[in-house]
Length: 376
Image (cartoon, rainbow, N blue to C red; front, top):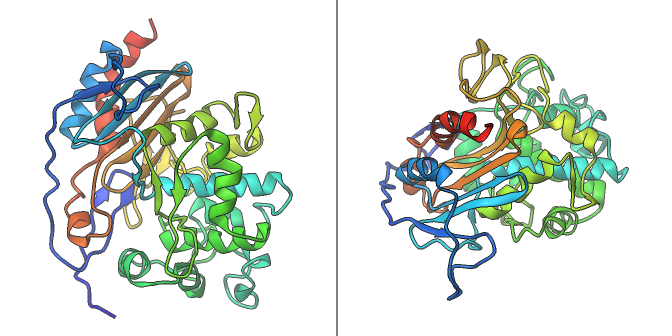
């Protein structure tokens, strides 16, 4: 195994990585291109102009290095921006936004009667039978309160970059804390949900995702596979701003889109509700803006009586990934904002250089003064 010099960057709610090399430069300055949601950048048709209301938000995320931005309000796209030659349907690494997809897949499997989130994960991960992990529930894996082993090098270097069979590696890690007693942002624990799902549905998780979620929402996203064919659930989804918007739209609509019930409203409600008392800023692999006891990183300190994005309403929720991938839902305003930022995901040096971007805070600071105007 290679020795790694650990470089940890906290991007809002997400720890980025442990790297084996030095930093990189992700400066990105590009001329703004505006397009409508109905047209591809490859066509020659005239492109619609976005709502000027959001020009300041677009400028803020462009300045933070974004390459795409989609804003949807009341079910209608009111602006789509592309920078750096990025096409509206091109896919790129979504990092931990994948986790919110993982939660949705678990909810769908539960709706199909293939599992219950309150049953022990060891009903499927039989390798945990007779071990301290035997009583870890699927709910606790969704809540990041499983107590499964975590440290930075294991989670961000070995799991993310070195292991070919990521699911087996994650399953083989031990139990560090009693289940339900601590909140830890634990990539390996989330990856064990791949084993749960594969055994529960009796087949490929990537195929299950395509058939039951991506295709039904009109998403072109796909789950990446590791060296032995396991779908990445802690990270690895190839996606874009349009698809992330579709995912958030599903949750704003209570799990049903255009009359098609994708996931139960009960699961959606639970997913967007604080899933533990030890971190009220976290649902089922979704970040929440709930005020209370909050923790924003794997090894971060706990704060009391605050919310992660204090200027915004407490019902705001979001998927967040390393290097500036964010998809936010604003229920009160029927508003969705999805932003992505480019990074070479196979390059450790490029990843190490992306940690200065806190895109959810950029979005929050820019949208907060606009919300009053939107509500008039």
